[in-house]
Image (cartoon, rainbow, N blue to C red; front, side):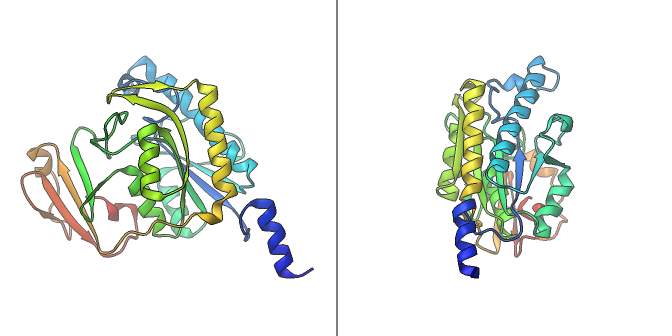
Length: 282
């Protein structure tokens, strides 16, 4: 049996040209999770926060199932919201791997990941009807700009993993986040689980329907993995942050190489090469 024939069989079977493995990383956030419909649910002291965490487990379960059903060998899950501790690892599908924040960076940089997706996404600041729109810190940061264009956390993830030739293949979150993902990354898979009503409230789909959408999107993204290309930033990358207040800008350590203060609220740096996640931050 010839090599080309075997390759054709693999493409027909798996939907992509299988090498030795297909490992998927799922980065999670909380604002865009199914069932999360109020800003109050982000407060760890509020009773709604526990429900948000349980819904997070449901979204992850759906995404993991979609990946594994599509033929993924390993699925890694990162609890990415606010320093972590939102997800109980014991509630994960036993076939998935829970990653600490430092571990996921090592996995990306080691070349062990073939595809990257984000579950629970929100839109960048200033997005009309973007539920809880922000980038990194909603209280301090007014805008992040890259090469002069305002971007959000979807961009940050895409640029970082793209530097290591990993494609960003799926977004799940509110309507505005999914629109942002498509505008940036093209025809990737999306799972719209709710729609913002202003900034601090959302109209959510029933949980079961939302989880079906996430599972289907993850399945399709993995099946068509070979169609997605890594997102490559134009280098050197200009990173600029506009803070909400001048005192927040005052707090930035300007002794870090490459940082310069442009005005009362703005700091800039140029990044010649993206090696770590911190390279795309101020």
